[in-house]
Image (cartoon, rainbow, N blue to C red; front, side, top):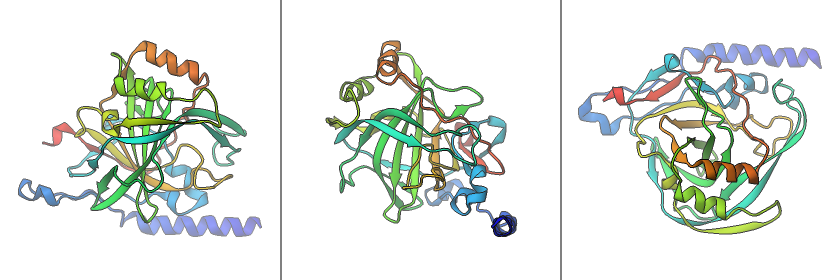
Length: 285
């Protein structure tokens, strides 16, 4: 058995060594053809091998010194108001043999808003492919860090294409003025698990920062168990877009959320490995 595992590791290592020189990079172009600029994502080791999955994990600390600038037109947002299903979400974690920071089985809880099945009105477009919003949920404190600094909270907007590929928008939330849309969502939260409330006319566009030009993107993973995987909860690789500018909520709203969900649910920062963080930065104009 151990010989078989060792052989698989060796084969995986050889495969990624061969792929490294062929990794996809940002497309560059002139200003006159900027509408044609696309973005090609680097291969994520988490999509290919159990033994390489730790190298492709989310969240990460986005350090400016590691960011490679690029230009592009993605993602393009197509968001409208919808009636969502709000749950006091329970997520079960099992011991992860590849993650020393998450070695024991446990449950975590957060607020989750799901898009009703079959509703494809909300989506983003990446490389001419539509990724449909399936749900958004919250973490406190934030899971991502930007230059070593975290946020009070973070909202993740989770999307999937018709072929099952995933893309997630991450927006940090900092303390400041009260946020009407967050209050709308918080007010709809059930008091406990096993109950679903309806949230009327919530617009996911209001969960984005005013400036959606300035963001970071990289290849990563889910941060909660998904895809029916138990022992390997973070194996599916996906595209991440993390916005540089936060949205705000008041101290009162933050306290309200903490009262509903007393335990933090932020996964620890994971190693970047040999992945590249691309920055769609204002300095690129």
